[in-house]
Length: 134
Image 1: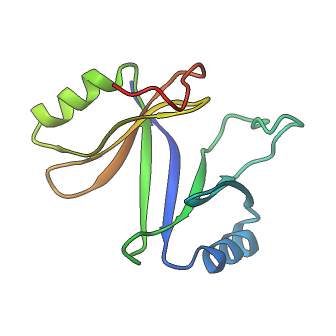
Image 2: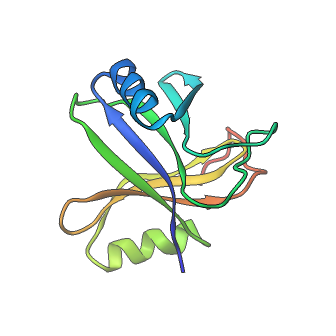
């Protein structure tokens, strides 16, 4: 079964969102990218390598929303991103942002279900390089 492995908070004010979630939940934020600005969110305790100590919960990310609307996007791990994208379209969904390489992570795409919900799908592959495209 495919399951959610990552959430992404799209906020019109990332600094304010970060301060809120740090204060209320104790989440940790680490800058991951500056173009666009992106922060990795850790929601559970980690070891020295940054890996979660226990398997409960998922970690996420924070990014400034492009349209100044707040939303949460959940990302689901899949075995084959290509097959999943075909399945999404076959079930009446839409590809919002096609398959793209994320170095050290794998391939990521964003989709929309028939009701308008946006979600991500990721095929994990740590050997993916930035220049790879399909």
